[in-house]
Length: 184
Image 1 (cartoon, rainbow, N blue to C red):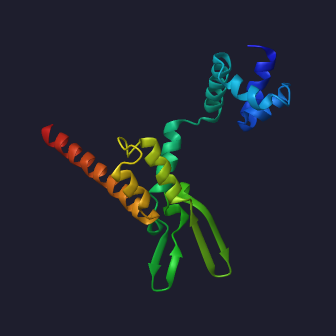
Image 2 (cartoon, rainbow, N blue to C red):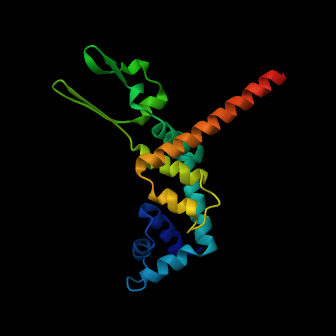
Image 3 (spheres, helix red, strand yellow):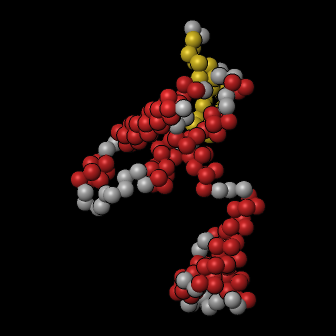
């Protein structure tokens, strides 16, 4: 790999924009729009980017499993985990009673006078990312009736379907664990 290509790799990792990275690496501004994508196709550049990303992931201890765990924490958090309803109204549960999963789902807590606001991270976005990652709708092709039906669902209906699917998986896993316990 040339020194210029090496510089391109470093610049590309800043903002993941091939055109700007090519310009900053010293390639012609006029041809940067085609040079950047062309460089990204080079095996040596791809290998250098993969190595840099891997090193960054190790330094930051970021893994696919860790990201999926965080998404699941957000996707399956419910307000009743954080709030208590009683004769005096709604109160925020003591933070010492919350586990790590629940803490991870909180986007914001604020108080203005007596008004308390609890905001959780975007559940729909987390569910959507999990669905895509787990490929829960595998086998559907554009134009399939099921995909068209899914696209026409409201956000609430989509959440209900995904939650129902995860519930079926959970029950199947529990039944399998129960069967294994009986067979021991």
